[in-house]
Amino acid sequence: MALATQHQLAELEVESGGTRIRVVREHAPVTVSRQAESRLATEAVTVPATAGLATVEAPMVGTFYRASAPDAAPFVNEGDHVKEGQVLCIIEAMKLMNEIEAKRAGRVEKILVENGQPVEYGQPLFLIGPRR
Image 1 (cartoon, rainbow, N blue to C red):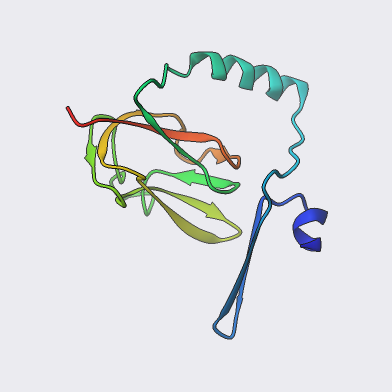
Image 2 (cartoon, rainbow, N blue to C red):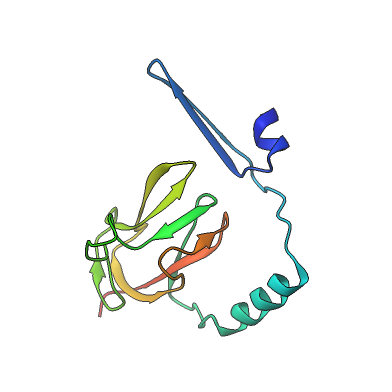
């Protein structure tokens, strides 16, 4: 807990000798510059209305990747139909690759993050709509 608090981490996971300990802070403090704050406010305005859409959010702070390797095809593209539990992306956090899965079946309406972009805990990544 002290490490997570000291380094302002949203999540910390340690594994040793077959034992895994995971600490997740509900709200990690985030320092945002005025320039980034202004940019984030502008981006928030451009996010489409989410009525009837499920939002897949980042469960941790890390780097967003659309594919398993730089030369691999993306896990999903806008317009793809996905199944519940299907891998949508990877978030790299502390050198660990974490697969992020669809919470429900549906159609990928919008991918809200660019490949290789850093993401924050709770940041919207995908909008999933009903199958059409």
